[in-house]
Length: 330
Length: 219
Image 1 (spheres, chains in turn orange, brown):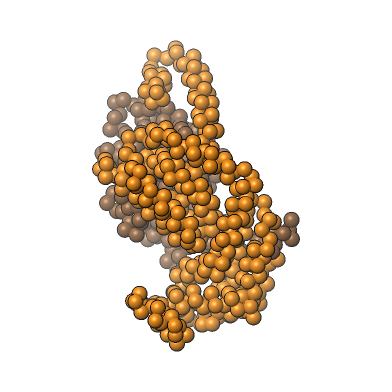
Image 2 (cartoon, each protein chain N blue to C red; image 1 turned 120 degrees about the vertical axis):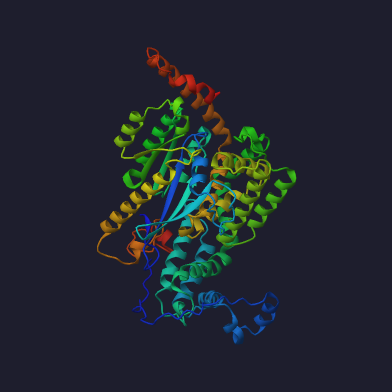
């Protein structure tokens, strides 16, 4: 099935930006206005108006867009088991959002047209936000259930819990932390709470921003205790240690959710980087037992190479690799 | 494939650069030097050196660099692909006093070429030239190796702030060339899809583009 909307020729209308100055409605007034929202919708920021407009349209089954969204939502709710994996499922959700966004930019169903509310370079971000509200918000609990079913049926859930429990018993050094000071029990609890609250929001971007706060907290602790800045060599092991200590197995599905549903254009940025690191930390923990086995194996391989190298390089008078390699490996 | 020209009229480039190398070769100091005092306020984790950004202006074109540091220890090696995927460039750092770290760079080059082909611009960097008297990787070896794999070779000292600006500038220029070639290769249809980033699929003729109920009907 493919979108076959009657593409109206792109409106030649020039977008009028209403976003010249920032218009922020005081929080205290918001509640009152919402009661008479129709009348006062002109007082909302253009972004809010646009998101609201798209959300309304998505619920209106007399429109093509409304049918598309509502049919998709019911389809996902009723067909939980037609996917091969959690990732495969999330990718179809992402694809749906990306394609409906493309549709929204061309349809004449949005009235007033989005470009009359939002400056061109902001449109994609605003539509993304709107799609989260129309699609992810109603589907959040279903998506969680589907992901969990996959974890259960594949045995991944049990393995994850076991490995998390094992990893939790490890000291920072055993997770590769070298020198930097790890968060104490109080900080770990604070971080754990952030991971828990991450589960309550549906927006992948909001989840990512909570993840960033966790990372910042870890950095702050590392830095306060040393006064220097840390790169990935120190940060990734520390994050792995922290994730293990927090012992929130649901974080695995959260990471998957963010990885697959976050706007792909954001994956190159800071959020994408720390999401990748969280994914990496979780992958290390998930394969904790195998990883230990692999390390024994790889050090065996390395020893073999060493010996091979020594045999080859003995005649040389110049210092051999082994001379300065030893300190590195031991 | 490169995230080039995404911003409408004014030509601008956004590149992802991955930083690879064994622990202790000075990756972190190198990139901190490069981005020194230019931390982006918008970033929440400003006080760190794992993810850094840099804005440049090269021959009138805006370039946004996102620099991804990786953990160099062996136990994290398997995570390499999740960090370097979709990279436009890689800076591979070794320590000129440590031949083993140069060997590690060779392993990374092999892996990057295998996984990403020639789309990725490589820059091999011999760091710590302030310790030149203890050098264990010869200049000739390093340079001829770099040439043989289509990479540029640079020497640097994060300590003395030498060679760093140059290597990143050269890398950016090469990434711009690659991006422009790609764009030209994509050719005729200068429509939206050419400006879309990799990973984003909004094209209509994508064969597996099956939204809504499609996932079942196709099986």
